[in-house]
Length: 515
Image (cartoon, rainbow, N blue to C red; front, side):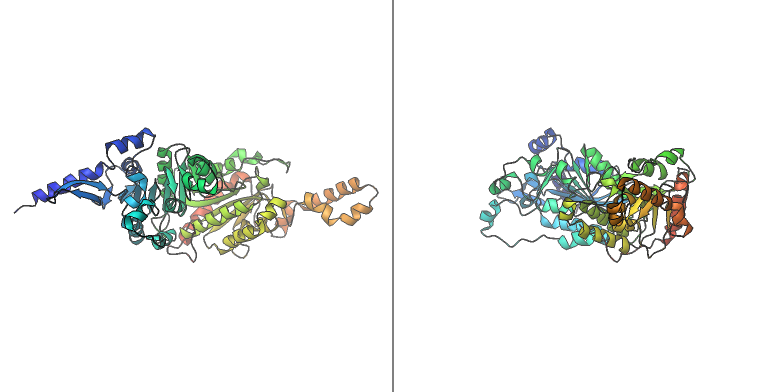
């Protein structure tokens, strides 16, 4: 007795699955400039490393004698693969099968992918292209009933946020549960003009009086600016490349430590340009990203969330090969002062660093929380205080480099003052309870009002205060541990990274990143 016929039947069914939604639907997908789900997976994982799970699932059609006519595969493709030799779990929506709608799916497949990533402790990449929610209202008539909403496997989705790296790529119109799956991740990406994200699409929006296109309702121009999604890219290939790069900085799960990368950049390298990059005129701005790029390992800085919370720059980098989480002020936006959205960005990023045991390097130029009616209306102090709490809750190794300003409550968020203050300052450092230029008139209101020449008095007071604002006065009192030559920043940070490496502890953090 041989099972050859059954194996032939197996191969036949596998070939049907590879056809996805059929030749016409595949052509329609590619004619829109989109890759198919199987093409996406092939580009994401290392060559010949994908091991599909559940590939035989779908809706089968049989003749009157019980012989198989065809199988329309479920519109979820999942399995294990490798990225740079490291095993990951990948789950992709197949838009060629009923546009990725859940009424053509088998709900257990998405949940299974989440469970496999969780229990095997391997990263998860979601390739999202469709709704993935409750399906069409046609299902109500077909089923003869409705139901109370539930999200199968959502407990696994939430658990994964504190256990394994989760990357979500929006690769088409993403609505409902698909949108929730996109943003419930550690790193999310949209493709410009190809992907859109919304709670419900244009037909539903028309019922609330808004006649809009998919792009107007939820294009990447919106969701990468409001903080829903981390990054915007031009092509699917770039989205996939970003996913691979992001995972390279992180451990497979919280039960391991982030791996050291290549050590091809001299840790003692010094950059003379840093000596003059910060203008002596405090009213002038400079490019913080140039500082970051100069001191981290060459080409290693991967910015995350570039288009939202813009007073704060966040990203991943390496120092002497060790992965670190980078926070940096951007003086081009509110002088680097934290807004409500910058505070949200800080919380999310610090939570991720804590979750995956990444040391933090903070480049500081923060004049305080953003000031004005709009920022009061945005509840900046509430959200900013939560960001300050995130700084104080973090237990990972932390190093601050004060480039210029650190004022007020937000300025104190450069580090947890109660921990070892591992920090450096440049000679351009300028700090206090509030900037002298903004505080003189408040502190000397009466004297200026009574002065014969208020302008002359104001200039005299400013000259006196400028003498004591020197960072060297602060160093004399050991209120800043070290003032350094800016060119020494990289060697000192590489030393920090090497000191911090053995201090990292694998395992679940006391708190972890929330969606």
